[in-house]
Length: 188
Image (cartoon, rainbow, N blue to C red; front, side, top):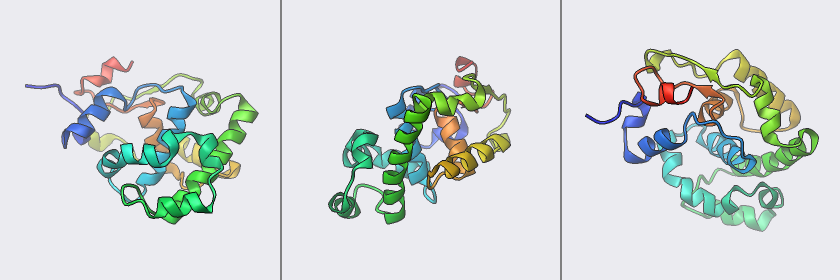
């Protein structure tokens, strides 16, 4: 018998690898944090599996999530993204990614780093949940509501409370590995 994982990570090898190596692991690198903001905002209305399958193509198309480059994208670059069949070709999401890169850099300027800003919501200490079953895991919380509202006030787009909570899970701000998952206690 293999490792016990959270139920959602048992669908395919790509999800299992992401779960085992990334999801719920504390992330403090601004480039990776920006990548996860983009991926989570791209996911709205789609499955996470779809995003993982397109992740490498998204990395290539978006200059390895270099927010400085993305913030400067012009109409020609937007048009090329809209023609790329390997990515999410939603004009609103593409424009939101460019906008979010610009706002991301404003936050870095104001707070020293996006990492310092976002982790300050939890005093730099991951929230450790102990869910027995995946159905207990919430889609959003009061904290994700607050962060989402704050991000929107700062100018971010496509970062509603559910997206923000998924970002918090992905970047280890919240440990939502269920109790029977081998990553549950490993993350503590």
